[in-house]
Amino acid sequence: MKILTKAPIKSLLAATGLLLSLSLASVAQAREVTITTELNAYRGDGAYLAIYLTDAAGTYTRTLWVAGGKSKYYKHLLDWARGSGLKAAEYDGMTGASVTSGKSLTITVDINDALIDAGYLVRVDSAVEDLRENRGDAEIALTSQGAGTPVAGRVYVKTLSYSL
Image 1 (cartoon, rainbow, N blue to C red):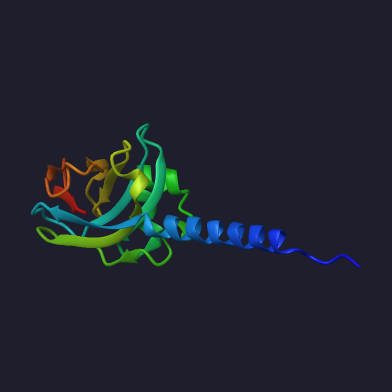
Image 2: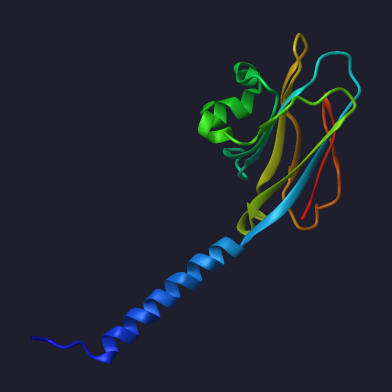
């Protein structure tokens, strides 16, 4: 019969501790980011908005929020729809009511620190029933320096901003 010595047990405990600290470090690296989308005044129904992340090349990365109650209209949020594949798992639990003319939508999401100052963008696609659909109605680089500085939108979005 072989008896375990203290050395292998100490190695096992050290490895377990290292794995635990690495997993806790990855959880601690997420940061709360508050994103505010203010709409222009326009005539029409509430706007459907998709707020999402893209990488530096413009490739869809992650859905942050979808405003609009009926998923059958999400296909009109063109770039987001293509990137997300309109898979419910991409937006489940991250939806709310459409946003009406002249109003604002503010959301708070956890974003990994590694994405900040790494070329990622927060983008907003918009659509209003019987009016235009807008790819990239607004976009803003996700940087430490850009926090708190609004950028102008193109059509329905008046400004887009975030705070860290």
